[in-house]
Image 1 (cartoon, rainbow, N blue to C red):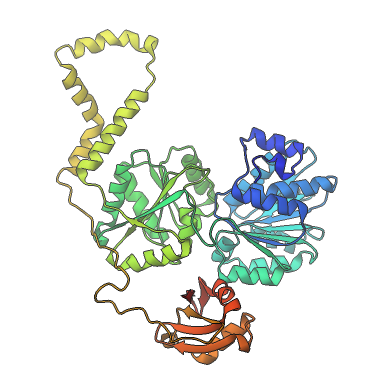
Image 2: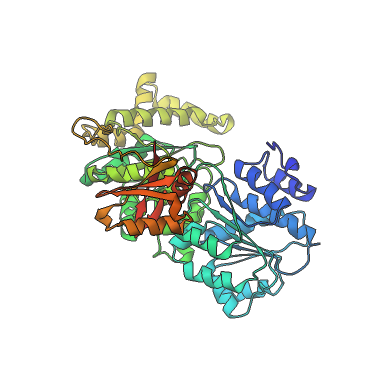
Length: 543
């Protein structure tokens, strides 16, 4: 296990630069990926959460290879990212890493900005181009970028690019670059579409998983509050009020909902603003600047608008509504709990949405705790203690305040110390006391059902299978019009020969396939948490 970047084999110029950036020891993804990239030439699929240090994991070895090519002036590395913000962030990081490599040039190209300055920058022939797919395809069409000699292609947040509808653009770009190159694909999750890209454009790719596949960060705690639909916004306010120092993103499903929630929060006195697709690039940049400078404590955003946001110290992510695609939850929650800090991912649901929580738990391999919304009294206590902490932390400027002490003493000479404290705190605190006076209990508490508890049918177990075979359970059945032929075709497409397929039992919502013991685990790995006919497929070995 490497405790320093020197042990990973990086050159002194890079180590000096990242040391000045505060890099002390490699993160798990850097420790796992950097040595492979420095010593091998094979393609790699890396599954790791957002915020785990992936840019350095692929950026530092890429810079090392450019140094090995004597800093020659031709485009050697292409990095594709889903959004303008992430594109700019990667570029800035690469420039910081290469601070002492004086002949190294990095150019970023993205939509939402003038194309002519980008064309001008590309004419200087940078060794690294960082691009969003749409803008790069435009530049390729104009013959403004030469990718004919790249030796490394990096697809960062590949699942996000596909979620944003860039599949056709990606296909066109991947077909236009040299066949002899190294492809590095980084993704937080591995949906079917990403696997197809890996199989089509990568050669015998090594799959490296840092953490659990499709899982969330271990630094994030997951909670949900269950309320009536009409109380969703009231629940949001109560959560925000209970955490006075909150700094986070509130995720909504639609642009309209994002605007409505942000408008309501601003009206109610919160430091909040919206980020959605209807904003111009200038408006978006202004909102993001205020948020990064912490002039905004709450950013209300859609999934698409939030992609590429790179802020490491968020305390909370709040899901005002769960995403339509449950895999998106991984990306949302991954925006907190970064840089070895803990974070909270909070979900507000109604009584009909518990099943979604269970599905997400299976995907991220984490358990949600059902939390109780605090009472009005608890919120007021938390706000009061926070206010006192802030007062205790205030720096007293003795010389500047001294001329006013006599004036203050004269004004307050008839008041006791206790009365002064009460009035001083009431200046800020009265609005909470007024708002939460007689505040109702918004919670709906439902216990998790235990498996096979009274009233539930026992889980079905198939009859004894053939010797040397194991039963594999799949979450599809006659309800999805599945037949024996479909199952055999699925198994053979995975490479399981007919001799490795035994008995098959198909029920309404599940089926059981007897698979040779040495192939059963492989079948589960290839089918669990994938898509089948547009629905999520779960599988497992029946012990």
